[in-house]
Picture 1 (cartoon, rainbow, N blue to C red):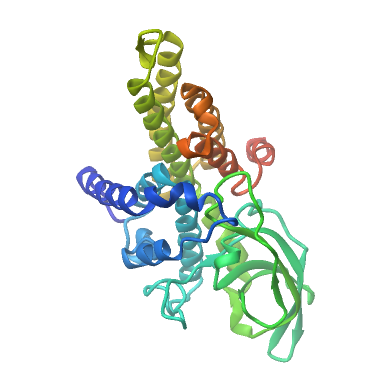
Picture 2 (cartoon, rainbow, N blue to C red; picture 1 turned 90 degrees about the vertical axis):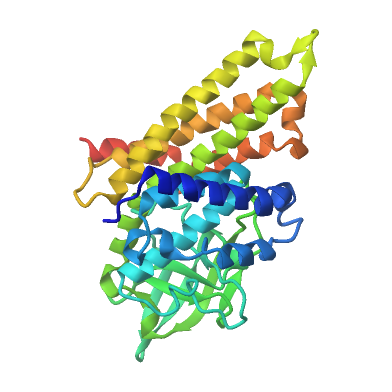
Length: 372
């Protein structure tokens, strides 16, 4: 396992933070208006050029493991968590293909683009990865397959080149993962869905009608679905880092506002209730930092971690961040609910992020199931 030094992580953080402030911050609020504003393709190209859409942040791809990926996602999420989620999805998809034995096009971006620009992959990450879907079925036809069915609420789908989905094999061979080109015949992508938050990571429904797929469209043969479940578990650490990044962005904005505005002839930050809310946010940041570091460390360990450790960290941290970002809105008073100040976006993003890898009630029941 690659050993990451504290100084190295600090250097990477600063590089990413500078990039995020320069390239992501100026367009974050406009991108949040999607689908009523255009998707930021130029930003995706810059992310690709700087290596952020490539899987080199993960250990098996000659990168630095989950700690480094978590640091990158945290800094990106301080400016726009939607972009961090896009990067997370691309990292999961690339790692999935690499661990399943594929290498073609992965080190160059993820999928080699025929158009010469950036390429994106969609994954149904809002679903619980351990659930067994039955919405898409595959029938054998010659050396390939015919797919029929639908999958709802897939992030990145409206702007993706391909989508990876679980499919039930009608020949009794269980569930396999398929790579489906978004422009293939019989593939229909629904209108973009206006989500609660993370709107710059577009969402849509997928319908497959008699879609012909070659045999090599299956990822990892029979083991693909197991690889996917395991990866989702390991990526809970970097996912929690996105929540921490949202909170850090909200706290910084709230503190900046409180230090610049006056009420009752004194700075807002000198009012006891405001100081209490800011103190609570800082306390959650301190606790969240420890939790994220531990989650990423556990994800990188070769030895198995406690059965619900990563799930518990993700669930509790994301819930805390959702509550803390509400305080961030309150510090700004009425301005906190106005789109141009960014705080209500962070609150919505934090709430939406809770649904990644399944809803909070489902996660809590899973925690109990893993610890009978």
